[in-house]
Image (cartoon, rainbow, N blue to C red; front, top):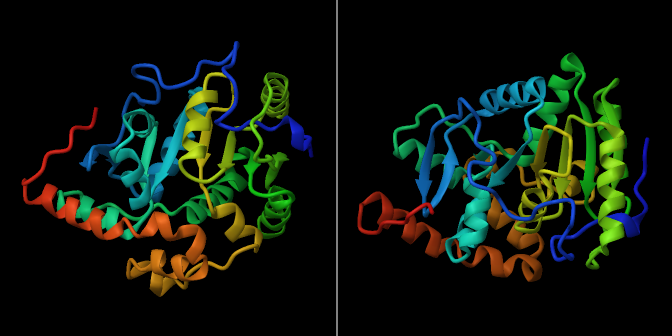
Amino acid sequence: MPRVPPQATPSPAGPPRASCQGGVSAGQGVADREPPRANILGVRVSAVDMGAVLAAFEAWIGQRQRQYVCVTPAHSIMDCRNDPALRRIFNHAGLTTPDGMAIVWLLRLQGHRHVERVYGPDLLLATCQRSLVTGWRHFFCGGAAGVADELAQRLGQRFPGLAVVGTASPPFHPPSFAEEEQLMATINAARPDIVWVGLGSPKQERWMACHRECLEAPVLVGVGAAFDFLSGRKRQAPRWVQRAGCEWLFRWGSEPRRLSGRYRRYPLFALLAAAQLLRLRHFPSD
């Protein structure tokens, strides 16, 4: 499979591109028959289940539309709260899926009873399963050195016949213009249908929005820690912990120093969400 040299991988902190427009243009990422969305603290979250997301992938790939998907837990919504540019990226995504039980419960309270959690690792596995029928081609971009390769190997063993056409494990230094150009050219040469981006949030969302028009693949999906979980580098929370909405506590306990800043905002998220439901606070989406 094609392999991108480490120095050829971009980072959202890199220099402006001549051939790729950064940010999100008006209307970009909005599908013709987009699923309904609900405002959660200003972020327009798609009221979907896994089947609806896979159906959107099929439509985008069939029509060669260029879309990106933000898989959205509560901490991403909190990131968007004080960052209008990031909020626009989430709100202009082809889909902004509920990746957290708190988000699912809030959508259901707003009347979207059919909504299910669209969790990054589960979405990746469900898409690979569907790909055995559709023949979709996958490129994995993200993780520490070697993680994308390990992920591709494990998925190939789990889904024999899965078409993985390339991997890249980006370094953390800001890229040069030439390095960005090399990565874009390598991904396009591999002709994937879906590029899975595991750079962590909000880096991966900024990266997808910046490079959406440069990449010919119809679908870009930011799945964060899914690379580490499905490659076996990190342990996932048990299913019962996930269903109870306590996965964030499990992850915080596993990596307290790294994730403390992210999860200590969750009580504030709960208070703000309650205020919104009770119509005590209004959060404009743009």
